[in-house]
Length: 286
Image (cartoon, rainbow, N blue to C red; front, side, top):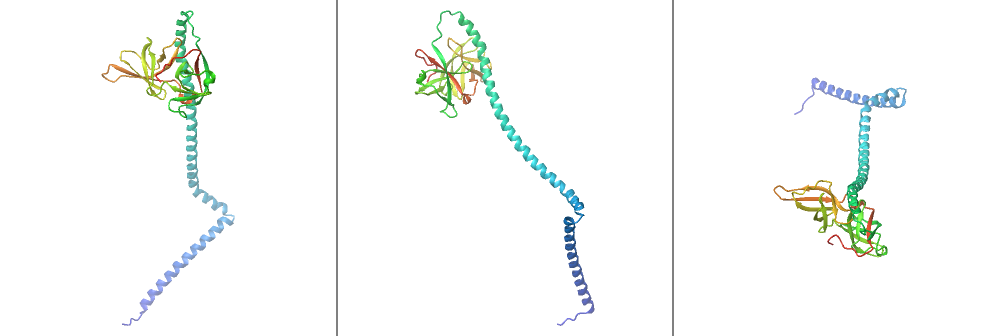
């Protein structure tokens, strides 16, 4: 069926076309205005004004970016400083361990020395201390052993006791080569070491548990305090370690004493060998 356009429908169609043309003109005008603004901002004397406005708008973003950069810079600096601080703390702990070792032994040494003065004519010159460099500590040598640069060429023999600063005996030579030797620490697992404990010098056996640590089992009534020095029976003062903890299980008549070397064996650089002039008798149970 043929439908004829009426004057009213023609009027509505023309109105719609006019609106579309107006919208198109507005879009074109907005694009032109935007282009003009860009040209004005970057190529006119008003550049400073508009740049100021843009800076004002962008400023929070710049601040946020700067804060993020500062945060990561501070974080990197913090971890770097923390690593340096941990390294310095390790050095200080090592120095403190050495000072404590000397402090522990000094008083006992003085008392023993006074007692020895009454033993006139007693020969204590059966050996001399030989300084030796540690070539490999337990971290690089087999577990609980040291490799040193003194061997049979300097009179070192199997069984030669090895000391650290402070008269602490830490082990003995178990293998000898021409210019080197292997030292096994008394703390090696399964080793048994005769020691004396407490002010009454009660004799007992210390069991090595590895890593410079020992365990002693004693009756509960024997007083043992933290930082007590564990001695090795000898004519001159020699020490095995310092008490770290005394533990007694509830209801038990026994107590467990844990002690350790007062120095970090992984950081030992030098040791002293008690090189004998006569055949030696081993202390540990290697």
